[in-house]
Length: 343
Ligand SMILES: NC(=O)C1=CN([C@@H]2O[C@H](COP(=O)(O)OP(=O)(O)OC[C@H]3O[C@@H](n4cnc5c(N)ncnc54)[C@H](OP(=O)(O)O)[C@@H]3O)[C@@H](O)[C@H]2O)C=CC1
Ligand SMILES: CC(=O)N[C@@H](CCC(=O)OP(=O)(O)O)C(=O)O
Image 1 (cartoon, protein in one colour):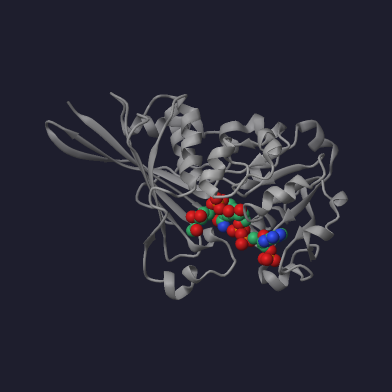
Image 2 (image 1 turned 135 degrees about the vertical axis):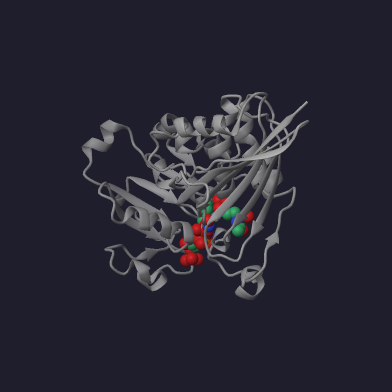
C-alpha cells in the first residue's frame, strides 16, 4: 500500500488578489520517501464580481458605483481598483465615524483621485448609483442592504449572506439573521467558479479571505476527482489588515509584532463557509481541519493545504489540471518558478 499527499500553497493580498501554488508532494511508499516540487500562483479580485450582462454594460459609458464602508480596508481596496477603471465611476462613498470627511483625510494615497466626500448611510443618495459594493461589518450589513433600492446590483464583501443555511449562520455568527428573504436570493461564490450565476445575480455574496485561498485550488481538484475529500488540512496565515481597520487591543503593534498567533482553532467562522463550498463541489459532505494564524505583516495571506491524492494521481496531474482550469482567467496566474513564493 502507498499513500500520496500533496501540499498546496495558496495566498492572496487581502480582498484583492490571491496566489497559490502546489508546493510539494511527499510520497510515502514501501520503497521509501521522495519529494517532487511544482509551483503555481493565482490572483483574484473582488471587482470581478461586478459584471453586468453584456447588453447593459454596452449601453453605459461608465457604471456609477457606490462604496458603503469606503473608509475601511476593503472599501479602500475597491476604490483603488475602480478609481482609474475605464468602465466605472465612484459616485457615492459612505462611512460611519468618518462621515463628513474627505477620503484623502482618511487614506492620503487617494488624494490624486476625484472622489466624492464620505457621507453617513442615512444621508446617502442612492439615485446616483447603478451598483453597490458593500464593505460593512457583518451584522450591520443585513439591515443596511435590506433598506437599499431593489433595482441595484450589490456585491457584499461581508459574511452576512455567505452561508446558505440560516441556522448555520446563527450558530457560527452568534446572532439572528435579519434578512432571511434576501439570503435566499443571494448568490455566493467565486467568479472563477460561478461566473454566469454571479453575472445575473442581484445580490452577490463575496467569499471570505480564507475560503477564497482554499476554494480556488481545491474546488477544481475536487470536481475532477483528483483528490480525496477526506483528511483535508488547511494551515492559513493572514496579515493583520484582515481584521479590519477599527482599533482592537489584540491587533496593536506590540501584540502582533515578531510573533505568530493561532486563533479560532476548530471553531473559526470560515469553517462552515469552506465546508459549504467544498461539499457542493464534491456533492457530498466534506469536513476540514482549519487553523488560521495571525502574522506580523500588514496584508497578504498564505494557505498551505494538505490533501490526499486519488489513487494513481500525481502532483503533476494536479498542476496540469489547475493550469487548464484557470487558463483563461485574468486574475488567476500560476507560478512557474516554485522557488519564488513570497507574500
Ligand atoms: N479586511 C479584510 O481583509 C476583509 C474583510 N472582509 C469583510 O468586509 C467587511 C468590511 O471589512 P473591513 O473593510 O476590513 O472593515 P473596516 O473595519 O476596515 O471598515 C468598516 C467600514 O464600515 C463602516 N462602518 C462600521 N460600522 C458601521 C455602521 N454601523 N454603519 C455604517 N457603516 C459602518 C466603517 O466606517 P468608519 O471607519 O467611518 O467608522 C468603515 O468604513 C467585513 O464584513 C469583513 O468581514 C472581507 C474580505 C477581506
Ligand atoms: C486576521 C483576521 O482577523 N481575519 C478575519 C477574517 C477576515 C476576512 O477577510 O474574512 P471575512 O471577509 O469573513 O471578514 C478573521 O479571522 O475573522
